[in-house]
Image 1 (cartoon, rainbow, N blue to C red):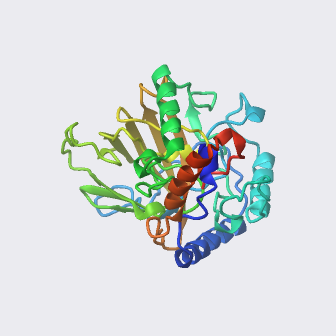
Image 2 (image 1 turned 120 degrees about the horizontal axis):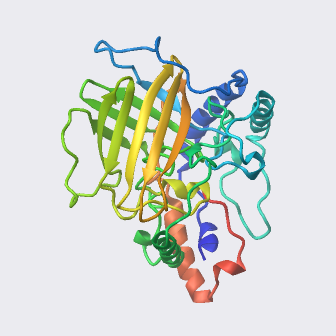
Length: 353
C-alpha cells in the first residue's frame, strides 16, 4: 500500500519556489562539479590555524553543505575496508558529476517522482575518504533492530499504509521536520545545507530543508523536563577544547523521520539520546560526528562521521507546507485504494521524494 500511495505525491514544493531552490541547488552542484577531485584518505586535519572568534572559540559560522556520495552504510564491495584509494575516489566523484542530472525512466506503471534537475545528492566523497558515513560499528553497517524496534517499524508501516489521516504519515510527509535536517543531519534528496550561528552562550543550526532552526543553549542550563517532549528534542551544548559537544534528548515518540529517506525504513523513538560533535578543520571544512543511542530501537549505539564544505551562497526558503500537494494526494489515494481493494503488492513502489 505504501508504494501505491507514493504514486500520489507528484510534488512537495510549489513551482515558483521549486525554481528558486532548483537554481540554488544547481549552482551549488555546479560549484561542486568544478572543484578539484578529493585526494585525501587521511584522518581529519589538526585545528591549530582555524578561524576563531574574539573569545578564542573556533568559528563554526557560515553556510555549509553536507550532501555527499558517500553512503550511510558500507557497500558490500568494500567490506573490511575503511577508506577508498585515490583512484576509487576519482572514479566515484567523476561518475557522480557526470550522472547527477541524467534522468532514468521509472518502471512501467510508476509515474516516478522528481526528475534529476531538482536533486542534489552531492558529487564528492567525505573528506576522510571513508567507504561509509558509519564509523562505528567497525563494519560500517547499522546494528540490527531490537525485537521492539522491528515491531515498531512494522506498526508504523501498517499505519502509514492505511493513511486514515495526516497523523498516520511520517513527519517529513507532513512537513513537520525536514527529512535530511534531523536531528541528526544526514544528506539526501536536496537542500542539504545548514547555516550556523554562534555566540558565547548559544549555537544555532538553521537548515535549508523546511527552514528548521535549533537554538542550543551553551550556558549550562538543564534540559527540559521529560513531560515536555519536542520534535527536535531538548539540546544542550558545551565546549570540550575545540570541539562543540551537543547532547539532545526529550524527543517525541514519532521520532525524527530523518533516516527513512535513505531507504532504511527506520526512525528513532522517544528514548533517543543523540550526541553531536562539531569541529572546525580548516577555513573551508567542518567535521560533524554524531552517535545515535536508542536502546529500544537498535541493539547498540552507532556513530556517523562526515565533513561539511563551506558555501559562498545563501540558503533559500523551502516552501514545504505551501507546496505539499503530496499530502492530499496520499490521503485521496488511500481512499481510492480502499474503495477498489488495491494493495501495495499489486503496484510498483515509487521512489521516496
